[in-house]
Amino acid sequence: MELSKFFEGLKVVELASVLAGPAVGMFFAELGAEVIKVENPLTEGDVTRRWKLPAESPDAEISAYYCSVNYRKTVRFINLKTTKGQEEVYELAKEADIIISNYTTKDAFKLGMSYAVLSKLNPRLIYAHLTAFGEEVERPAFDVVLQAEAGYLFMSGEPGREPSKMPVALIDILAAHQLKEAILLALLRRKDTGQGAYVSTSLLESAIASLANQATNWLMAGAIPQPMGSQHPNIAPYGDIFLSRDGKALVIAAGTERQFQTLCRCLQLPELPDDERFSTNARRVKNREALNTILDKRFLEYTREEALDILMAEDVPVGCIRNMKEVFEQPKAQGMVLEEVLPGGMRTRRVKTVAFKLE
Image (cartoon, rainbow, N blue to C red; front, top):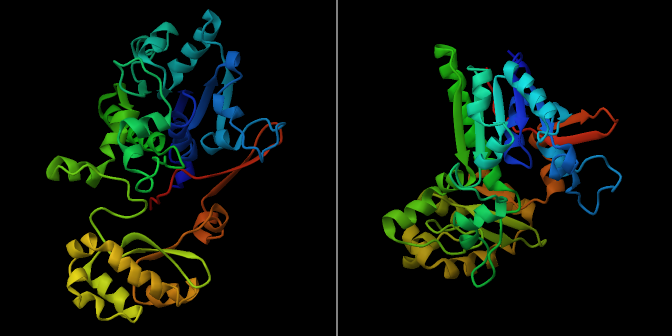
């Protein structure tokens, strides 16, 4: 079965805005589900419709940001503050398999859109609820607030400089993945029991769940992660950036002793692994500055393409630091672009949220 038809017959009602909730809706739309996006006419729809770059036409009906997570959806403008509007959604809920909501708990009850209300209309309904800090906390927030609260902002950026947020709303994306996983489990259980479910996650919990080794560095070693730019607190050279002779940047990720030794051999520095300062990963982490001074000088003897050819031929993990134009010059990236012409004739493009195969 084609992935684009996998969820044909599944009906999703999206009562969510901005990024995380709509990303969940787009996931199901990409896989063939019918997704109905409910937007508030009193606010001229989802706020991201108006989040336009200066480079975008002010006359464009929607922003590129909005397009990023709203693909193959049917939009309905419904005022949920009216009885008529609520009844419209109730009719949709009766036939829906999934409802995605990012209302605060208080607003969900106020608008008559809570799980308690909608599940009575449809016991098979899976109600997926996304909040910022949990159902019990009436506190709205955008991604950067969660980057701050979950520790990402503190440890991002360069030493001695102000924190630097990640340039995509990564916490929203992480929360969307958590919610998708919960919905898929609920669908599996419903197949056996016939019963719907309430599933939820918060941006905060999703962010904390993704702290990975940075969390365990604190929990097990008592080390508070500090800003290190792209460098890695546990491995060297890893995330270290070097300029080539033609002024282009490369990043190295030598995660094993063998890879470090191969890196040194490729760069005609065979003596480095025997240098006591660099003979183990722990010593390289401690003496990273001295190591990078040597590597900086050597990389300047090669163009970027020369260095790439030499290192990739020996399986040393190395990457070009690409801008967005360069990213989408890669064949794999070109294959991940989704196009859609909107009813008004606007041609839109975005990347897939589905990046896996099922054969």
